[in-house]
Length: 484
Image (cartoon, rainbow, N blue to C red; front, side, top):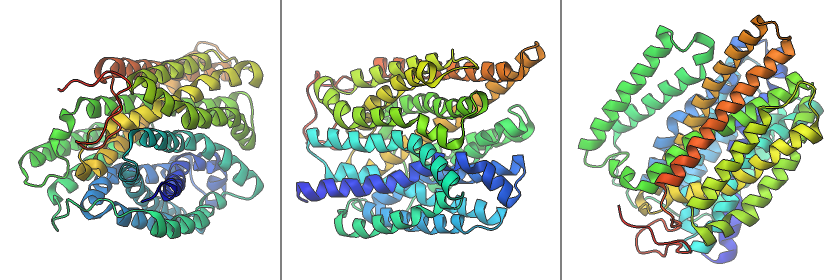
C-alpha cells in the first residue's frame, strides 16, 4: 500500500470514527426538542442516550475480536452499514420506541466500527514516525469529536430540527463505505479458524451490558437500591465466569496474557480515569453555560470552538513530535496535568462568569492536554500487541474509555446533585446551589485526572510502543523499555 493511499485511507477511517464519536454528544443538545416532539417523560428521555451507550459498551470487546477472526475491513464495512441504516431509522423516527430501538442498533454498529478502526490503522502504518503521526490524527478525532458534536448539535437543532442530527450521517456513511471498499487493506482474519469462543462472547458481552445498564441508570433508581446492586453483582458474576472460561478454553476470546504487558494494562487504567475527568468537563461545562450563564444550544457549541481549534492543532502538529522526542510517558503525564488545571479552573467559575475571563482560560489547558495525551495513550494500549490480537486490544481500550466515562459521569452527577441539595437547604440561591454542585463535580474530575497522571508516571515504561508486533522497530527516542 503506497504512502498516498495510506493517508487517504486514514482520512476514511477518521470520517467513519468521527460519526461514532459525534453521536455520543450531538444528541445531548437536541434532547429537549426530542422530548417535546415525541412526548418523552424526563425519565424515559434518558433512554435516547442510554440505548446507544448500552449496546456500544456491550459489543466493543466482541467487535474487536470478530475483526481479528474474520477481517478488519469486512467488519468495518459491516459496522458502517449498520450504523448508517440505524441513523436513517433514527432520523425518520415518529415514536419513542422506534427512536430508542434505532439508537440501540446504532450503538451496535458503532461498537464494531470503533473496535476495528484502530486495528486497521495499525495494519496500515508500521513505520514508527508515520504511526505516531497517524495516531495523532486519529487521537484528535476520538478526543475532539465530542466537542464538535456539541457544536454541530447546536447548529443543526437551531437551524433545522433534531431529525438532522441523525440524517447528516447518511451521506457521510455512504461516502465512507464507498471509499473504504476502494482504499482499506484486508487486515485481520489471520486468526480465523471458523470457531468462536461463544461462552466467552456471551459472558463478556452480558457482563458489560449489565454494568453499563446499572451505571447509566444509577442516578435515577439510586446507587444502593436492590436493582442497582443486583445488576452490578450479576455483572461481576458474569465477569468471573468469563475469566474462568478464558483461562480454560483453547481459543479464548480474550487471552489473559494480554494484560501481562505492563503498558497495555497501565494504558487501560489511565483511559478509565482520563475518561472520567473528560466526561465531567464536557457534561458539566455545557450545563454551566446553559443553566448558569443562560447560553443557547448554538452559543454553547460556539463557546467550544477555540478549544476545538487548539485541540486539533496539538493533536496533529505537537503530540507526535513529543512522542518521538520523549516517548509515551512524558506527553501522557503532561497532558493529564493540563487537564487537572482546566478542571480546577472550572471549579471556581462564578454565577455571573464571562466567556473571556472564566470560560476561555479554563478550556485552553484541557484542549491542549487532551490533544497531547491521546496519541501516547493509544500507542501504549496498542503497542507490543501481536497482529492477531490488535482488534482485541483496540476493543479493550475503547471499552475501558467508555466504561470509565459512563461510570465517572454517573458518580459525578450523583455527587453534584447531592451537593446542590445540601447548599439549597443551607440557604443558597438556586443558581448558587446548582453552581456549587458543578464545582464539586469538576474537583472530583480533577482527582480522576491526577490519578491518571500518577498511574501513567509510575507504571508506563518510557519507550514509545509504536510497533504492534515483535520484530518491528520501536521508537527509541527515550530509553529502551526493559522486559517485564
